Image (cartoon, rainbow, N blue to C red; front, side, top):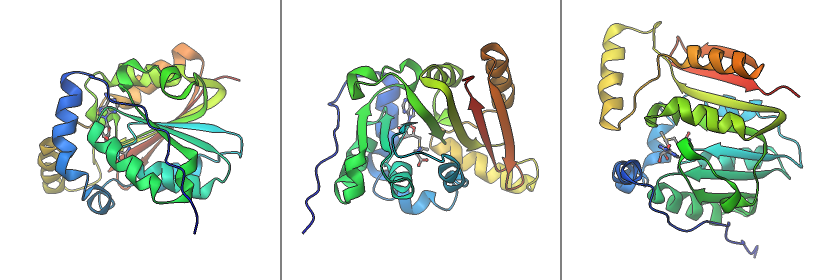
Length: 229
Ligand SMILES: C[S@@+](CC[C@H](N)C(=O)[O-])C[C@H]1O[C@@H](n2cnc3c(N)ncnc32)[C@H](O)[C@@H]1O
């Protein structure tokens, strides 16, 4: 029988109202999250494939939720170490449980933190990452531009920040956009119309490269910012 070392997990902090809201949203949802979200959080696997992680790389997901993406990535990239932060204690409980059920979880480390004030050293004794990704997270963070800057600041020279999130669904029927918008509102999700503009501004300021793709008729946006080497 394989013994599974429990993943490292940093203890509870009080991160204020937004943590309370996220815990309320996910207290029950976390039990059905992975099954239900696979139908509408599109493009996540595309992002994971694009990570192209090496065996000694350290990769951080900001807003890691149930750990679904990190566990998939650890399957795809053996040897890489993966780190996940989330503001919700409820989501982290599920992430830790999921990781404890597979040997892949040995390479996934979780900690509680706020994307808008990222401090990974107390959680992981690490302040730089080869790649960072944010999957359907910016649309749930009120100061999302701040979160973008915080994540970019933790990249090693030459490192990449990958983002997947809701687009404006310009290529989809109006009725579909209306239903989706009401559905997302129930979960406090606000697609960020200004994301392309914020990415360009950050890239200009930091002399970074930015690539940007609209996927599935503009259902979602995938972007990569590369820090200069
Ligand atoms: C829609 S879920 C996405 C989870 C995962 N990234 C995925 O692709 O399945 C958004 C996640 O962002 C987290 N989150 C929201 N605001 C946050 C913040 N300020 N700091 C860190 N995580 C946050 C939520 O708790 C939730 O787990």
